[in-house]
Length: 291
Figure 1 (cartoon, one colour):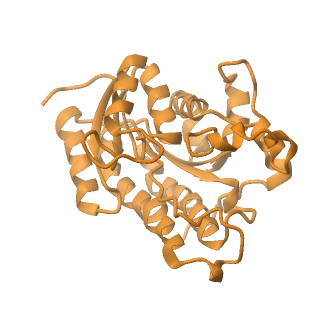
Figure 2 (cartoon, helix red, strand yellow):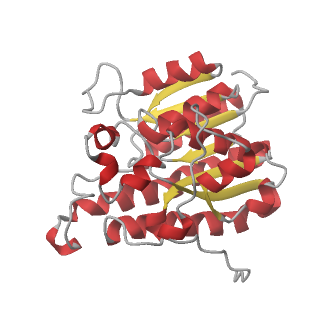
């Protein structure tokens, strides 16, 4: 066992996409990052590419220490073993990013929910329930360390209609979990927050940007205002260091607004704008607590 004085983070679902960018950004800030996901070298390749090993290598290349852990977040025992390993190897945890999310094949298919398969409910298993399980096993480590942060990656779809009721319920659910976990963690110097991401330029979304008429369509303004996965990670890193961390705990926050507040821009100097006016405002936590 080794004792670590550096910040230790777990980023779930980070073989690719948003999770990968968050992990790399935390690595660039010097953190040790446990990179979790199902796609591993030597296993079945994912159509979008990426593995936990390649992300871990990118974290190390960025200046941190990447540790690849193959973990199916639908399996509670694998999740328990993940956090047991973190405790054994570092005796601490500073940041948990709950990002692992099932993306059902029909998620963006137009049409009402009854014309789609029940496969859409997978987003409630991996993306809502799995976030609860990861937080459950991470909480004792975070409390032991103090000064910790749990982040849920969420979406404006928690408020507006986006991809249908299964997606909306999943995102609204993690927002409420952040609010309620914040109450339980308040006396332990651990903050919990849910972040609404804008349209993120990931491997899955890249074909939309390559379409010749992409910017002319109804979603052109959202594509033009897209966020990079690394921007999301830099915002999370700033939240962990933020003196107002505990005051923000229990709130649903918008990544673009936080980026502007913290002075964080994209690599090309662009400042993504909030979609609050177009898609709605986050819910506010209630001050009522019934034990």
